[in-house]
Image (cartoon, rainbow, N blue to C red; front, side):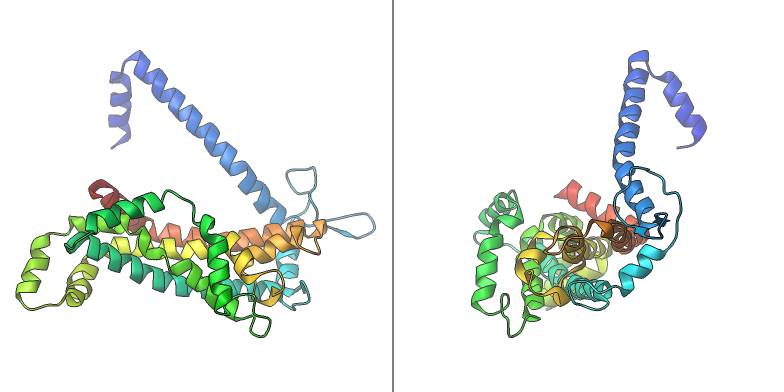
Length: 311
């Protein structure tokens, strides 16, 4: 809609509608400012490079919102420092998180799309009760099952294993991806838009369900595939609760980035003078997520809207 059409539409509205619209925009602007201020403060703190008169670096929280001096010292120290006895700990935490997020992205995306295809295009007994049950279970937060998952993984040696602490990474991947199929609702709504006639025609030609799924459904489902992959990647990348419980506090070399950054300020050896390094880590963690959303925003919106309208 052009600017002239918007102005004409606004002038044609009644006084009450104009007041309501203006109040809505004012509220949205206030909410946006409330959300932006903490993010801006963290970003400014990441580049804060201030020193005391004796030359001591100030890395803790300060009263001034805008830094008196800026620099990249916090980022340099973050990547080169030794934390909890682990040299170059932050790059290792980033690498651990990236591995977990990539594996979870692949496994969870495949499971979600497979379950969504079954719920959308196949008809079988107990299909409706299963969908209703999944909706009810989805109302409860996932961390309610955290203790049960921890003991299940511990019973098979995938967490709390002193001989093989690296197994906890595998356990964390399983914890993220094992129940991913229950979140099929949005993808199912997208698959419902695809005409059933395509599926029936393929069956008449002798295609199996797997061939239909791989050769017909997936090529037509690029938006929902990207949406689901993005959601599956961002979950482990930003999660703290499951990573903290499953990996534990005794394996700093295998921590994820969220657990590692948290431990800088609130771990067994907290140091408030590491706050600016913590802020620098937050900025670095946000970069991949922001980049992905910027480049994949179109597909993200298409996946959500198509699934929400039909589902």
